[in-house]
Length: 277
Image (cartoon, rainbow, N blue to C red):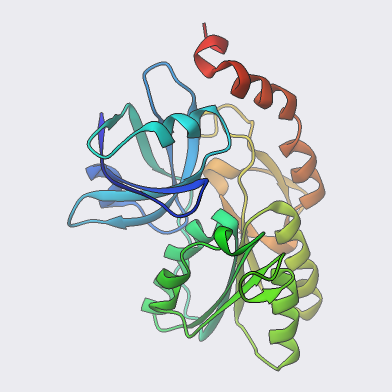
């Protein structure tokens, strides 16, 4: 069992939870994730490691309440327990000697982006970030990024914060102004990542993305998280979740992501415990 140390709301549907998980905290690195089960017999869900504290033996996760299991997480309070918190899983991001990096985070994609950019800044890179959301409420971790990024840019669909438009609009503007980056790291909805790669690839700017396909066990056994990278089949759980954005078959990823939409809505309506009986 894993104790919830702290919990707070980042907006109406997104929460941050700090969990006491000594082994995970000791081993994890940016880019990796955990498989969480709220209660015995419940569904396992993958959640990216948003932060960690080795001294305090804690790991931070950030999740959006969109389904039954994240609803169970939202009902938990500090001091209560989680049944399983398995990890770290997946491949950690490589430490590279970049001079200048641009991060792009859409919605909760800012959560896995945060530890990656912070690590790069700690290794000497100059870091800028673009954060996007439907409105100001959905732009998360702005102050956290501001603590180490040189520039924090914001784009919202309705113009309630930053530039009215998309993260791609800000990206185009930064590049038009002559900004040069050794790499762009983009994490968020698949259409957003596809659009960013559509801009950076013709300009030969290396671009990393993080994929979150359907995932059951997180260890490469189920095959549910298979993705096509450079024409080859990979598994996001063991080969990723971070990949070279130039090589990702985004159209296939988008099709597969929607395969079980009707079933997911059914589970949310009647509860996972009734499905599993």
